[in-house]
Amino acid sequence: MNDKPRIAIRYCTQCNWLLRSAWMAQELLQTFGDSLGEVALIPGTGGIFEIRVNDALVWERVRDGGFPGPKELKQRIRDVVEPERDLGHIDRTTNKNNGDSGSGD
Image (cartoon, rainbow, N blue to C red; front, side, top):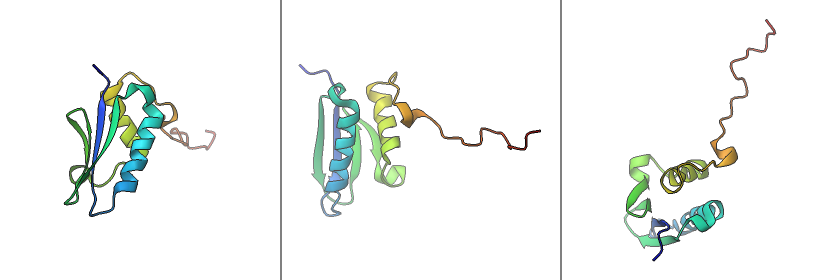
């Protein structure tokens, strides 16, 4: 029995979202590797685009306002699959100013 999580990406074939879905699957496999039991691409229709970890819905195109970027997708998957995992630069915030006005005062 495999206790590793299953990621299911359901995408609309009428909307030609296969390549987008396959790219997201590749990103997740590259990042999480052996921590995942399966990443499945499931064709659908009617504008559907959703990502589930086991039965938990982590992204839904209409509800979440479009498609996830790689950073947000990996963070949401990590929060379910390996909450303690550090995603390196993805988890770092970029604040070039850090509150310093640069005036030297």
